Length: 236
Image 1: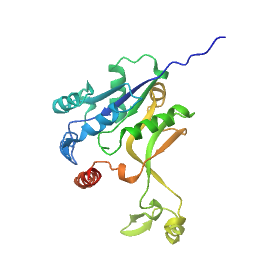
Image 2: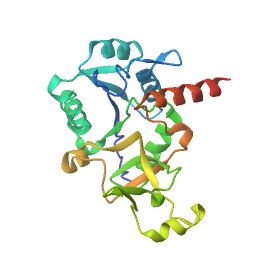
Image 3: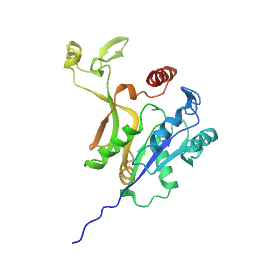
Image 4: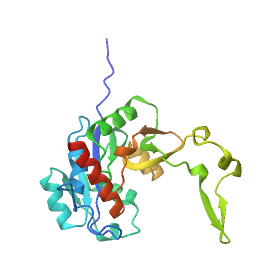
């Protein structure tokens, strides 16, 4: 009897890490609880039972040195792809080209942004499993909004106006529609889909749910303080 053997997909984690950062200078290598910020994502990626390679994309020598110390492969990013307005997806494609990936449909990319230090290897593995066992184009990690956007306002001609229908402002929080936001921690798709759509988003994107406590995205000094407090509390 002939048995069809399905080849095992190759799974590559890509961590995009520019040297320049205006909000928090040198944030990717700044110490968070006595460890460089980027180290958390590298360690989570290398601890995954699914990921075959962890590649850091950077133009910065200090990030290169630290990334190699923590066990990542480094793909040197050209300065033209490391500007403030450089799209992350372009850095992803540069890594794919640099690694000379041939079998696009059987190669899975797991994008791990270095600004999500509280996402762990169990999150990564659960998200990858979700992608592998479902019929979908991609998986993106999300967390539930802690403050409903349905109560949001905008300023219009100096006056507060509801961003959505005024009726939402009269509803109790528990009666509002549940809403979710990408937390920036995990993005998963195949190389083939990314090349076709130039994005991880599609109408067939599945959410991987993460709790707020592991969804801190480092963008400001306050985020650093919050993440460090959570790590310190967890260690105790």
